[in-house]
Every structure is written in structure tokens, then in C-alpha cells.
Image (cartoon, rainbow, N blue to C red):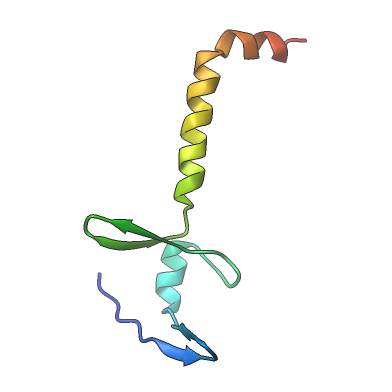
Length: 76
């Protein structure tokens, strides 16, 4: 799918409008944040924070490493 977005001047910034069906597919609404992530293929716009994913991966590694200790603490 390809959608053309036009940039417009808004004060000292540039803004764009997004088609309603595209916003629905992204599951975003007014006030939500979108993240622009550079990839080897260009820029990816996503509602998912890539830093959050990295943080959760780190948490999974810590939790799996100390699984027995967390089980013990949970049973107290």
C-alpha cells in the first residue's frame, strides 16, 4: 500500500494529515505518539516505541536469569 502525504506549514513547523483508514489500521488516535525509526530500507513510522521493546527484552533476560529468586520472592 502506498499513501501520499502532503506537508503543510503550521507556524514554524511542518505538519501533515493522515487518511482515517490508515490511522485505523495503525490503531492510533489524536494525542497518540508515532515513532519514526530509521531502517536500512528507509524510515518506518510506527506507534510502537522501539526503546520499550529493548527494555522489555532486557527485563526478560534478567527475569529468566534469576527465575528461582523471583519465584521465591513471589511466594512470600
